[in-house]
Length: 200
Image (cartoon, rainbow, N blue to C red):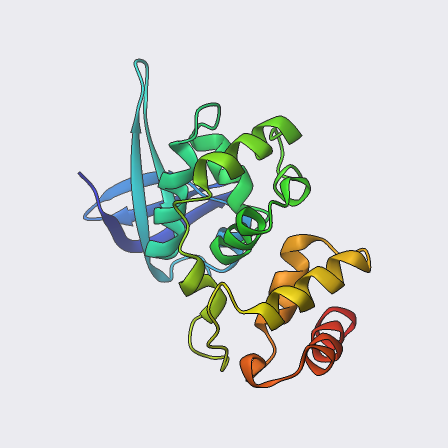
């Protein structure tokens, strides 16, 4: 099993890169968004990998972080979504954005991925709803002071208010997540700050 590859980035194509290690060039399928953050040609890079074995081929898929790889594995566990479909979803949204879409039942956001229809997106949400970590997603990665439980009534009210104003579930959740000390604010103040995060 190849867990990751560390080596020189020697070629970049549309959705595909080649990394050389020990005189061997490893070809990896990657999301274009991830490729854009990989580095410049001939930089040393480290890419987490998933080996997909089919009857007629073995394909390596590459990811910048372990989180990207873990969410990819969840995606391909959904019937109807293969490795290419999982990569397509991660090409339009980050793992956290996908978790927000799943938590917020935002099939429309997921269906924007090439080759992923609304029915497949809805099926994905149903199958993965109990597999995403809501607490970790709501708390963020530590750069925002946002400690709130999933049953926080004020947070839920703010999200519902944003949805009522016409914003998507995942967009509303992300906007509320960005508000510092959200659990200490009244709903009206929380809503105003969340709106600023959306409007800018």
